[in-house]
Image (tube, rainbow, N blue to C red; front, side, top):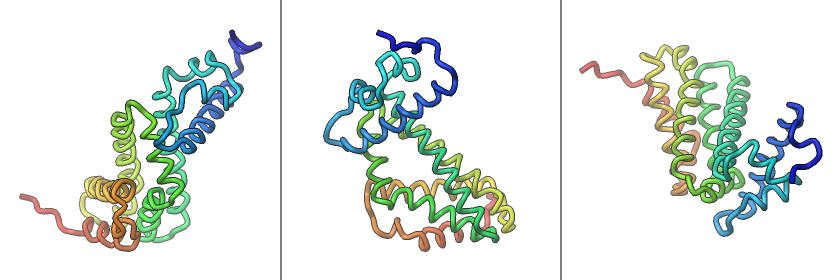
Length: 202
């Protein structure tokens, strides 16, 4: 049964409901971790909304999970831009971005949240793949201008290679927990040496 006024909500109310579902969904996914499944019924009960409200915005729990991941990516980009804007040199901007992106994996709360969110999705591989592609695009986009300012040849191509390297380090931390992959200074030194290497034209 629809709640009063539920069928024709103002845009700000709809935005608030979506935000509520995203926030509550993320909290429940983290709380349950990888051991106990979260149901749509659990999410709407915790959000104080109806099933009808949930399905107005999301076709399934997996659609909500994908939206939570996308929302996290937007927040991560905003966070990285903030860190980079505090630096004045191109190299400083790149080092800040690399350290900030690694922190998303090394932070125990954020790392656990990422693993829990993906574990709760039946389409985790598809969602993780989409997130990985978005992450590569984000890092490459953030890195291109600083690389160009450093005088690096083919900055767009090198930014993509840097993004691939950095994403690999993050995946290693998230799932492998290898200590060396989580050291920002070492990862930054490796990435900066790589992008400065000459391109073989053959």
